Length: 338
Image (cartoon, rainbow, N blue to C red; front, top):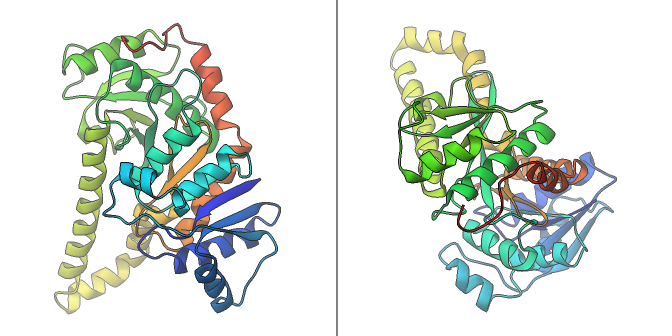
């Protein structure tokens, strides 16, 4: 299997991207990693790491998408950017998947334009991983589509169900619809109509759930529109960082609290690891006719290595084929009026 990695995307590119690719190349020696970006810069990073694995190759791209570039500008005016070149490698069947920590909007736009969506899928969705008390929860969509219809949310539920089953080994993922109350009469027209579609489907739909229940052991997949999902993501990240910072500040206030912190260190280290996005690598853009893993902009080498792992797992598990198969089981027609 071949993974195209955007070497120029992210706050720490190309240094951490190349280091992550080296780690992945060593851990997955039977697979090929294609580093896409400025060839000279990539060669320098490989040299600085005193490593040049045989399963790493370089595909030169003379441009890079800046974080302040608009998604449409980057696609129209930067056809030789590392993001576009990664996606085109998959479109040409020269790579099986894409990994990028670059401009999320540009990745979504490039993948949608060059790879198109899977048969029957109307809108792609970003599925983010959230830690909870006893495991993980997938929230979809986290920002790929903010103008949703009930059919889009229904298809998000199907796609995330497949991903949870194939990648996280959850046999029958429980799907919840994010709403302002548990009753089926609650919410706006979008959630009410989506509730009906999900209720009449074959997936394991448990009904509406509220925001406070995301972190409980209630649902394995939480479905919402992209605007709401992105707000949840940013709020959760900010809250987690603030809590950890506050706990550390208070714990270092005096001698006795420092002793308490030392005694609790194993528990805090476990909690920190659970909340560390680098452990999960990246998140999938589901619904695209190809495997596309989007990483956090601050991704380090560990995150990139794990993102490549997720890309390889997704390809090996034939996630996209499984999604198409699941959609064919439902009676819901892929029409814009749904």
